[in-house]
Image 1 (cartoon, helix red, strand yellow):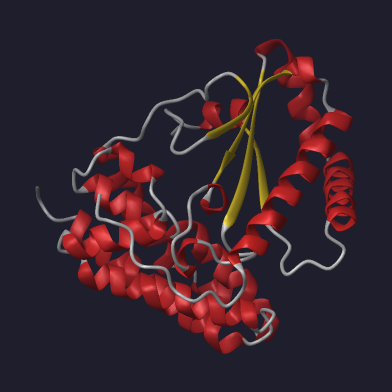
Image 2 (cartoon, one colour):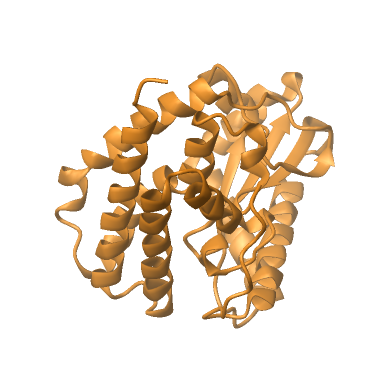
Length: 274
């Protein structure tokens, strides 16, 4: 791996952002404990950009980057607990409880971390493998699954790039603040791109443990400089949009365009014969 880049000025204090992430994480765990018996849970894991080391602002964009909470259930409890989480009323109550707990911990936050709660049992049934990439164990056993292979990452990269290029009908009616919805539909596809492209190029599964800034430096060093440049612009525009309260459509559209350029160019690299 390339050495991390030198520190850069942050538009918001990263120490404050980190403290708010921990507050949200504690709030999610409290909401989980109130509703699910601990004996039903095999493991709880913290993943996403929020869980990694940050060197520069591209490593974490408030409210756009993920705070992933993954829950692994014991087999005998999984059916009942999954049914609870699929119930809309239960889900709304869970979210409201976590939100109230977060606001109690942080009455005037700089940002509200955006959580993604996932039941691993259900996800693993839908996929041939589950990637353990940078899973911080909060409770229980080591995470299940395996590391993605270069072939899997190449195939996924080609698939998500093609999907992103065909989102036109779903984004053409998004105006002003609603462009946020369009940005989110692209973000989950572009966020794993640096690790996915490097893995597809043979760098190894360890790339998934690195923060984005290190991966962008590795892309630049590995002959993917243009991809890294597009990604840099993507995160610059995303930070501008956050600082504007996600109300200005212009930087969000520019971010989407930069993401599409990065995905298309990465897919071109990944689709070339080995």
